[in-house]
Image 1 (cartoon, one colour):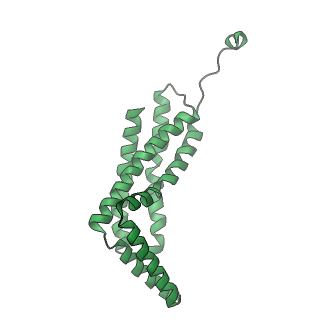
Image 2 (image 1 turned 90 degrees about the horizontal axis):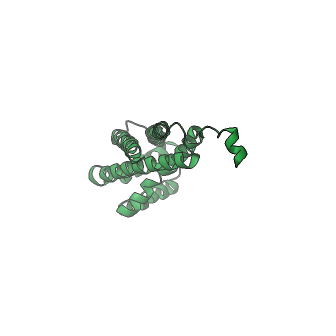
Image 3 (image 1 turned 90 degrees about the vertical axis):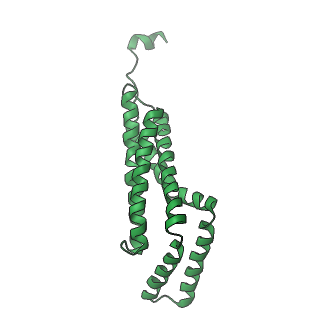
Length: 182
């Protein structure tokens, strides 16, 4: 199990990290519109978690073609945890080394967007203050890790649950003579 979990977890994690490394700078410099950033980010997370399904399936095939829901979920969850660790580590590097102005840019973008919609200045000021508060929280590495982990983990758990339900497969039923003796 260890080899399969590590292999699929690392591949999923590398895919997740690569997609984040590509999409975050595009979002920050405006190539991906502000309102589409979440959609792009979560799509990338879901795509990286497709490997959870294939990891569970590979484990099942290597285990003689059978797997319980519990074992399948455990395999999937371990893959998700490894992949999520890559996701979090990538964000830490991007945020602290390459995008320390992330929340300032997001606050400016939000203000521009709100002004374009005709929002009152008081509401814009409140949104800007909220972004400044986020920056203070995200500048603490422990809070940053916790908040960042909350992005992929629920999605990964859901993918692991669905994959385990789809891929569970019981072994052949015991012969009728064996059940009569029991």
